Length: 425
Ligand code: HAM
Image (cartoon, rainbow, N blue to C red; front, top):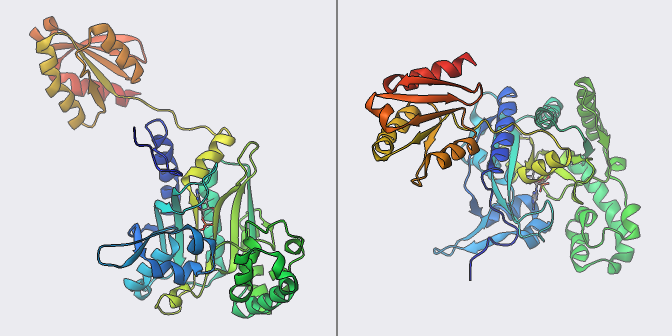
């Protein structure tokens, strides 16, 4: 019996992987313009990192983590998200000591969540995220939101909706928490057992329960926006005024609470509004986490960031029928006829590659016609044909597939010839 990929994971094959590279390159280029630098952290971390940051009443920690014991009996977890590890690294490497703050970082890599796989939801998915840690200036909230919208725009996506909310500071959240308890407590026995535990521990989490989302009390639950204190209101007003100033359209949704515990103040998501996009429309999620650095043992350093998965980004591109860059193909395919010519083509293809051209040759001992077809399939710009007679004269026939022209070139001049022709275009 053959072995298949595990449920909720996928192979990214040539033909698809170029799309991944394209999105990653756009995102990295936008990060360069906004002055964010790359950070790479391990794929597994101590389990405690996620229970302390993402929160032990969240679905992620309660149901979705790939946790295992290593041979030294340590509890480790495949990272379900990137923020916790970036903040851990920020503290561990004392990045707060760098004179210029915030520290602006981006990352990309696989994340793991044991969720029920469906369209747009995988057990291994790749996130691209940014974190700006060390500033409470609302201008940085607007910058981070502008950055994600810029990434989408640069890739050609248009049918997007930016939704934002404020979760307020600790005081506002406490007032909201009391209101939520008063709202749900009288009828909590109508809710799932998870929600019953959440009521005392973290009633906000009830609002993103997948099982009870249609319960009538959900729609009438107290809104955080009614519990924001003056400071939190002023902060949120500043963020939205900056978004207005840079012309970013948004919708305020008081029900947006996000599924991770570390958030306060600004929370946001970007949804796809493309027709035919699957049931899960959230492309990107993010927000502010002012207490997280302290919770993980660092000094007070307020942070904000977001992450999106490349899987959902690609799905949105496909749903909007956005154009992908065309595969430019090989620079040169060498067709060799006869044993001597084949032997010679080993060094020839190497010479072209060393000179910076993309080049390939036949490895299946095929006839000339089949080699020419292969060159076509590889979309080679030039096909260089080496026969016995030509080899004897130290020459090679070069077909320019774009122009339909043909030249007979000295073998020793092939590289220069190809380079000159390519530069001329
Ligand atoms: P999150 O909302 O859990 O936030 O995930 C962010 C994004 O990751 C989602 O909007 C979605 O694009 C993608 N995603 C999540 N789960 C899956 C899945 N199972 N399959 C495919 N894509 C998925 C975070 O992870 C936070 N760390 C974001 C953040 C960064 N907040 C501040 N900084």
